[in-house]
Image (cartoon, rainbow, N blue to C red; front, side, top):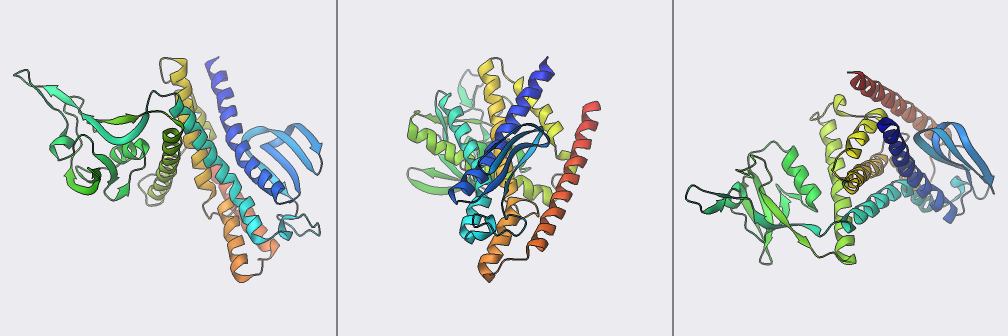
Length: 354
């Protein structure tokens, strides 16, 4: 029964993320008076479909993709409402709209999560870990306090990398193999950098040796933090992609749809209450949707980022690249991406049976 529930949650998450992405392309295309021939959620055989106006809407069997097929997108068309007939800047907005909507979804989910919390997190130090010595006196258990950090310091950067939210802060400390850091803080209205700061909690033997302040919850603080945390999550994903390319992570560290379902099952069982489990699933959904948004902006053939590059070249040279050549590039790119997905899925299945 648990596996069925997990599968349903996974289908809901994939459908939401794919649907919001394709809806972004769809609605901006409509706003630019571009004819949309097909709008589909999922891939493969149609489960449900209907025609409304010029557009066929369909729900398909496999929830691992979707598409928004526009007239004149990959082939020439004499239709005045064809994609290729519109101004370059209009086509650019259509291409970028999918990734943008994924980031918007991440922002909205973060805002909802913060709204369920008692306080809005910050990067300002509220207190340090403490302990009791042999004489019964309360002493610090935080190495970062001994290194020079103080209560009230707002952490704005670590080793030159800007800290937008607690997501940034935790990621930086947990993924960097360093003994000490250069921490830039805002103290008494002025910025200063404290060198060779070590983070260590004597009581827990962990890195997090301080707690951050919580701000009062209101529309301004919630929206502000949600925006910062969306940027922080996108930055985290971008840094992970760089680390993958530079060899810090290998292909064995990647997961496809099957592996993601396994992670969703873990998230759905994390927490003692239903609210905590829902929050855990929402956190994972935030990461996935922002990941989809960032990844789609990469200039890889077949992705939105590549289509944007072709439009940018067209805008610079004032002449479009031949449709057949562009279509071939995207076709090869999609074939490689599907092959890559198959390899990662096989790897996920192997892990499952192990």
